[in-house]
Image 1 (tube, rainbow, N blue to C red):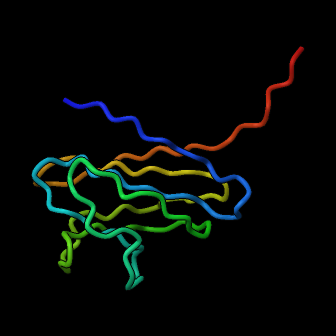
Image 2 (image 1 turned 180 degrees about the vertical axis):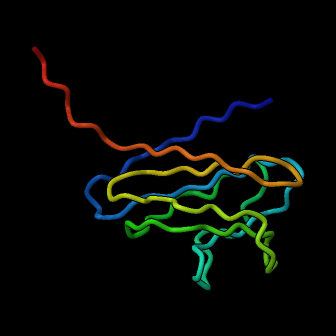
Length: 115
């Protein structure tokens, strides 16, 4: 087991949302990730034990399709992904022969008032 620390920078003033994908599914092929209905990949050739880097996107609620690199068959569809302005969302792809995912979203919080 290897522990990797990933830096996460929330982008509160860009007007966009930040998205990242981490491939943590042993035995799964390298992945291409795109928004349903789009022709261009958001991320291409994401290999096991790697993260795709950050992609700043317009805020929206989207569905993502994950496919084996350069293949047409959808291996995993992630629905209802809410990408809000000024947040950073990370999708972690897990599983093996059947892919699954979980996600977490980071956002800056307003300073807490001192008593």
